[in-house]
Image 1: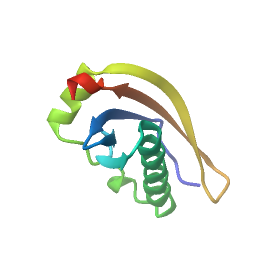
Image 2 (image 1 turned 90 degrees about the vertical axis):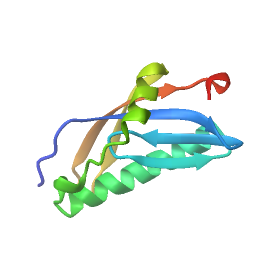
Image 3 (image 1 turned 180 degrees about the horizontal axis):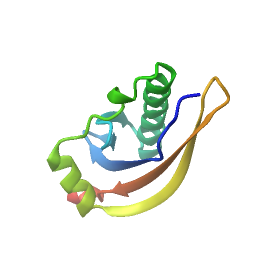
Length: 110
């Protein structure tokens, strides 16, 4: 069993190019969707795949790749819309708990 740390991920959701972007700041992963929900779900799928791959390959050194500073600044200026758990089920039966904070930039501010 691989020892895994508690993990908090921050996600910024904002309108972009006729759709929406969802950006995970700690991992610098971005997904686009026609709707906010589509972008959000696509990002969570990519986050799950990334974290599961890193853990399954015992390669925690490659887990984090932070987003640029201007994205972090935008996140901290946005409105917090949710804090929720996200659990990943790994093949070995382990559960990897993640806390997710989500913030949104209103359409008018984008």
